[in-house]
Image (cartoon, rainbow, N blue to C red; front, side, top):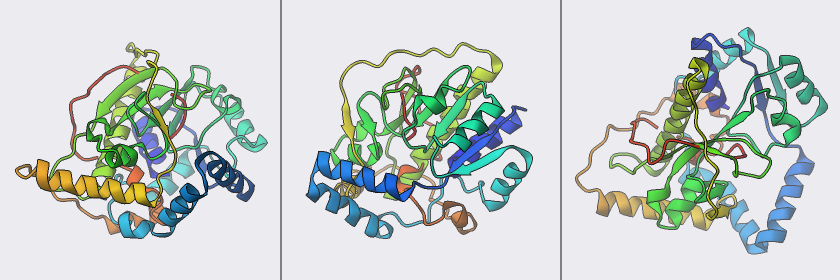
Length: 295
């Protein structure tokens, strides 16, 4: 995913040794088990709504706004030539785990990854970090920015950098930041801005680690909600609330226009999950210290 190669370019600039695991999808059996679990836990109506959201994705999430326009196919190919890389469907397959053992990493960095087991992330000598697109502990799970907007909770649209633990999105928090809505961006543009800002903050944390500076973390307080992948009605409600906030609450604010970089479209395949990608402007953090899952 482009966010992984964004991290790779930043680490390469700091003369760090890197390796990349690219999870290209999920095995069919895993997909069917996930859908069956969602149906069991959330009901048939939710599952139908989720499948509708995927079928109508382009209506609400056009593949035209890129959080990482500089990460195109050429950049990705160049990184793969210079550094060890491994593509897989199952991050816990024997070949993937052996790739990690052979590389012997100090840290494992997650951005946009599925739920990982200790059999993988525990192979890092000094632990794993994750970029979670949600403000912990308030929003755990999937599509947290969309859910926060759908629930009229725009003050809790943001991200968290946290240590990875076995329980999903429950590890010690290093950094939490709210990304405010500004006028001038579309719904998908705002979510792209959020994703980029999250990755920029992740790089800032890694700079501190590389420099040997203290990186404090704190245990999460109890509370918050766990949200599943957003269905069609949740997605539509999120965009409606976003449009209302921009139209009514932010009439005097201005922001630079979103620039579409068509040359980068290929790096995103079919524009997968653009509403979870994000950021252009820097904002003041709501917290500065830090989970367990790549979201």
